[in-house]
Image 1 (tube, rainbow, N blue to C red):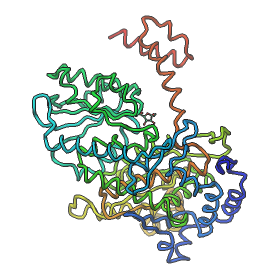
Image 2 (image 1 turned 180 degrees about the horizontal axis):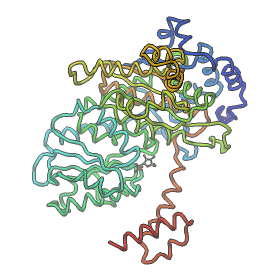
Image 3 (image 1 turned 45 degrees about the vertical axis):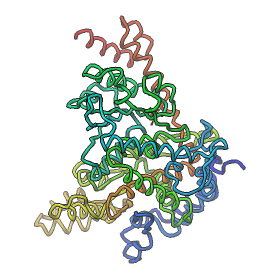
Image 4 (image 1 turned 135 degrees about the vertical axis):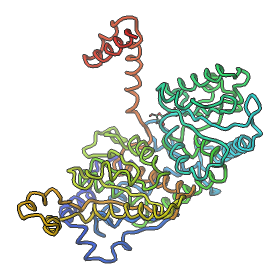
Length: 556
Ligand code: F6P
């Protein structure tokens, strides 16, 4: 049967029913709904794995969720979920499965790709990773001067960078004292210089992380690091001790000079932004150890089991995904904010940016039809409480409608005085303020009570009105442990999947990044050319910019 999601979403009866429902509920005030239903928090809170989702501060009624669930069913979500876990070729444009879930499959279920169970290879790679990390962390594998490794440099970009970096940052409390982890991603001499500064080639291990082993930034950085190593005491014969690679393209890695026994496989059925669970997670395992990495996988696995089995109305990723559809397609939300109230989770927005925007930032469905509705929102955000002193003004009084996810550990890894109570109170009061706002009457009363004259109150009160009725989710958990972090990341992976299925897009390819790369090669040639001749082939802006760079360069 044709993929139900390939039909036009906006003409479906379920979408039209939601449109009608929207007309009847969009003017409801959450503030009133909370007053009318004291049990609203219990009604719209769900606990699964180690996470709890409070979605009561949303512009919904019970009927909303029921209609959204009908929409999900009409878009074939149940069978689509099964297809993903079973390894169907759901990445249609590349004719590939999307099997990041296989990387954390702790069941005895086989997972078939091209008729072959891939679980033995997944498990053997995890065992190789464990042995490799054990040898490094226990100083059996040492550098060329026989010193133990103290630093690992992970060279990679996009999904070969953001996921591992987020997780290693999030799990800093679990780092052993032995190995420091550094991430080198950008083709920027300052990034390279900053990373290498202070490192000792004798005790530094490099991991070249690239699924394609063809990414310009990564290959240039790897080449430069190799030269740095050779210029600072290392010999060609020492390279196998200090350079490893994680890639789906073993031949290219060998051609680069990585010895085969140091190459960890990843597979074309794992998307880059979904690859943290693979050997791309090696720098993370080196710092937190195998057992904690296994806990991370366990958390993701438990979220997988929940996603695969729970009815939509009790399914955390489905609820989050459907709420996002409700805001994008009915409230015309253009963005969505990720607000972790935890220093260690400060990298989460950047990872979810790639996960969400590279998956669902599309305008054509899997059948090649242009879409007549919005799809992936702009994902942004940052750590709280800092955001309250930066962009929360817009969230509270701006004209933009930006639903927020507050993410909160109830316990901190580092109790200091009453810091955590203050952080938690900031988080809870922000979502409360977004929901309840401040009316003109309340602003006037506040100003009058502060002694202002009536005319002064008339002028100032409108400036102090907070519209409120702005939705947010709060995802909370006891502590940001490896298992919780694994469940949290998997939650967002599945939320993105739900939305992609509703919108009918392929969440697992990324053709949009190709043009920039192609044009980049041409511009690069013009920047390096002997004369300005090549610059003439471009539009006036690009040509002018090339000439500006060249004239600056010629002055040096
Ligand atoms: O941005 C395009 C992209 O292919 C991402 O999807 C990927 O995570 C990143 O570049 C790095 O790709 P690779 O791991 O092949 O170097």
